[in-house]
Image (cartoon, rainbow, N blue to C red; front, side, top):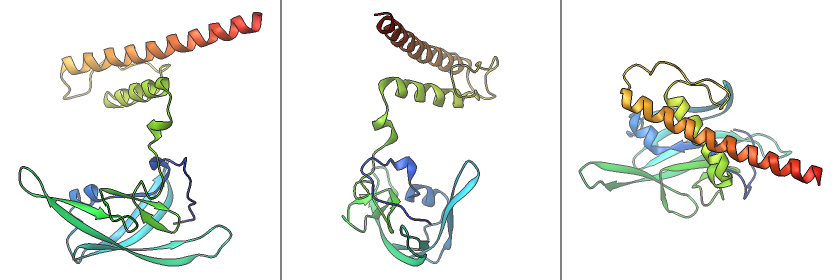
Length: 199
């Protein structure tokens, strides 16, 4: 899996993660099931682990390499809890092996997996400026309608199949509003820079 260091400024998006909700949707949580999980970035494999499910726990098996060290085999047990939902059914949780709090996602930080708080991770959006957040939101909306990210890319002329016309119009309008707001902010900053250069 490689070597990860503890970093107070690291984000959840920068770490390998295991989401128990995804495992449940795939029907991978029944005792006796075993398999592997892999992560990739832009089509390139960045890590993999093996796992098996036992009664109320998940056993992770992988290799870890500390900085300037040798590869070593690691086996970690993550206990699983279930709580009742308001409208029936059960919701599964991991128990963080360090703080014992329930969590839906555990992250690879250092040699072992733990919850976001114990890994001292923040969300990427927490490091974004208000303009960054507007740009991110516009790009997510662009993805919904099949458009390329970035304000310099044209929006599609036709709505995606199955999308209501009113939804299509609302998303387009919101994208144009957000990107217009960001463009105006950039223009204002350029004006300030120009005035400073002249002064």
